[in-house]
Length: 150
Figure 1: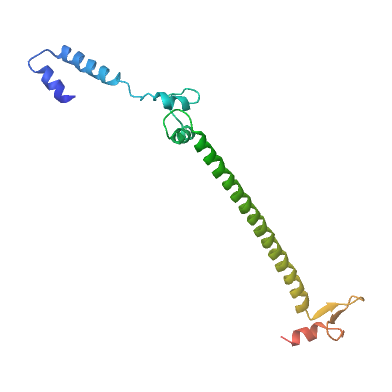
Figure 2 (figure 1 turned 90 degrees about the vertical axis):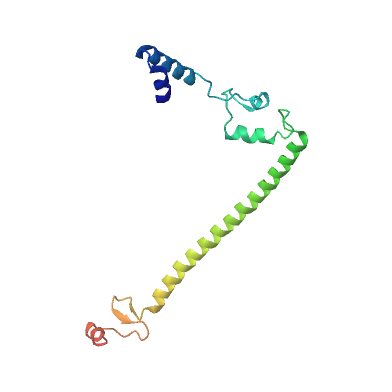
């Protein structure tokens, strides 16, 4: 803008050059910035927004012949691929369910083995009379004896 300003103001009054610069700026801003969709792409513009979103672009890319429609052969190919993907998804869901069952079984087994191991490791118990006795001999254990072992 400065170059144009210098050229237009050299030995001339200042006011006309400002109007000239403003008119150039208005013309530059009034140029259309949006690209229009082609007639074929317009068929895929749902809602006539003037642009294609990602999904519409994907469907437009399926129009290999540029006729504004997907061919029957291509539609059958897509349906076949969709069926194969659906079958693969079912297999993966089944495998995922099996893995969940295995993990749950391992968790339960770990908890049970921990409880059984803790019970087996004890060498004392409380008998029916409420006395603290040895698990192996049934003899009462006194606190004095327990402290002597340490």
